[in-house]
Image (cartoon, rainbow, N blue to C red; front, side, top):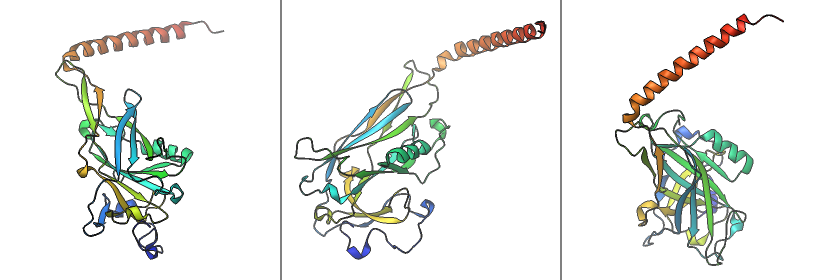
Length: 270
């Protein structure tokens, strides 16, 4: 384990049963500040973007490692953990992510919260997400031979918003950057020994607690990595038009249905 004696291995207690997520902290628990007199800094830089349009998007996080690629061995088979806080206007469908994990096995998501995918934004709370992404030779790119990077993509969905009195017809939903980004490897990496250490679930399939090392703390990041989404909303000034149109459509549809039923009963039997 990174920065942890080999006797600790990957779990806090290898003989204990898996702990259900409800019994684990809702947020990774910081257990060490790292080496004394060591200046904690972000070992990665991130860039956030989105793909697709409408209410169903992909949230993309590009992680650029500041560690020299020669010292960062891909064979160590590391896992990246992104700690995300979703605002009320965004949700993740855990069943959809589970299907992606089943097919590709390179990403998984845990949420200690119950996520209701049907609720509108004003009735929904914020949600904590733990996003796991495996780091291996297939997922890491060394484009310029001086840095390594990985892209983590999760599908997200925008919730419906309350109508507005204005004229624009859109509102903004802001996705903040990850609170933390942590790393855990099967082999100890000297470059990470002095980083702060956290305790968090090992993975989606293994809810035991594992030791993780800090790669990124948003409080230490000066640049803005928020992603802003434009969400269409109803306008209250259209209320009368929508009401009248709905009534006319309902009456017309009812008349057409009644006529069709009467004609069906009048048709001669064959």
